[in-house]
Length: 132
Image (cartoon, rainbow, N blue to C red):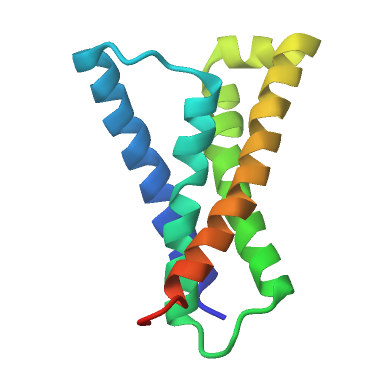
């Protein structure tokens, strides 16, 4: 099993970097922000995390290993996108206090969880595909 702290840091850097790049793109090109964009920006780096996990593993990774990696990435996502903003921004705390806001945040976290599984699978297949 590869180092989970290394994978967590790598994922954190990916989601922050992609969010900053997307913010710049929004300002320069006027690209609209949507909930689905946030989901893809959070889930897509999981493909690279899976490739790194496969390459750094000393043994074949089983389902419990993939569940740990998925949970780690999802935990980092929730920490960065929900917990920290709720601790800092009053608007986020207000959103968490209403059923609609909580439902919207739950929808994004749930969609990210599902897409994360898909991108982890894609990344693991890419790392073990033909020619590897």
